[in-house]
Amino acid sequence: MPIKLQKLPAAVRWGLAVLCAAVCGVLWAYYWRVFFGLDNRVSPLVVTLGCAAFLEVCLLAGYCVRRFAKGFAAKGAVCIFLCGLLFAFANPPLQTPDEADHYLRTYAISTGHFDFDASRTYPDDVAYLLEAFPGAWVNAHTSAGVGTDPDTGAEKAYNTAGYALKQYGKEVAVQSMADSFALYLAHDVRDSVPDPVSEPVSFLVIPFLPGAGGMALARLLGFGALGCLYGGRIVNLLAYTLLCALALAKAERYRPAFAAIMLLPMSLFINHALCDGWHVTQFYRNLDRELAELSAYLKAQNEQQ
Image 1 (cartoon, helix red, strand yellow):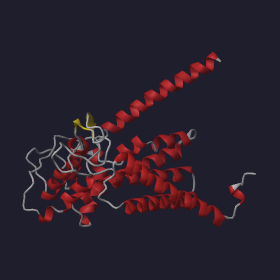
Image 2 (cartoon, rainbow, N blue to C red):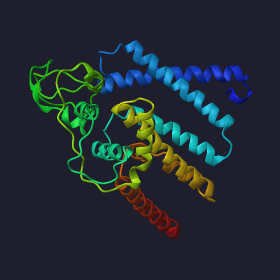
Image 3 (cartoon, helix red, strand yellow):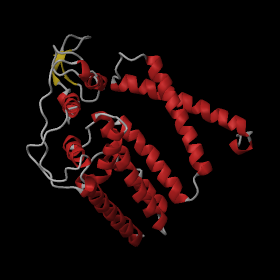
């Protein structure tokens, strides 16, 4: 006879939940390492414990949302912000579409320069950041070609696009995103001077204001270029969360459907980053078209029945 979880003591239910989260963390770490070639220079134990601890924190966050957040809009806003934070820190610096240019424009606005000036330059730590994290890191560090199969000795096509470890060419060093962080963080002890960075051509101001506020606050707190990036991302995410909360509070119907759209991975991926609004507009325009086509199809099916 199946056991009903609701009849179990609360301590037992929590113990099962914690155990399930830990097991899922172990399976996640195994999948990550095996299928995506996670950087094996990091101890497997550290990765496994990190994944398990992360899911335990997610479990605790879910409990806090259910226990303390009042109303659907508040619960939805907290979930959007927490999930967006994962994207803000899991997504490497400057890796969303055109984020390098948007970062420079936002940085300029955060220093009070609202106009465009082609001769304007940026501090050295900003130049080091762009040097360490090229805008298309995966493409810049992905190699493809024909190699030799170690088991059969036959020629075999290879491509490193789906792996965390990258090697651009056969004779160069294997790299991961951790190497880019190390390169940037070591810029204070480097003898070389980065190539100067000039301002991208952009006259937009309003879409970059939330991120500029986050960057200004980060600088006041003593953070450098990397801290400014994360400060801008977090404040952008806060702005997105606030707009979503207002929309959910005003909506009279279909609030779960709206919340699901707000929590789509692409929604969080675009809206946590430093962006100019174009990618957001295009995404939701395409989504609106797809939903309209789906609605028309379902309506036609109902009429046929």
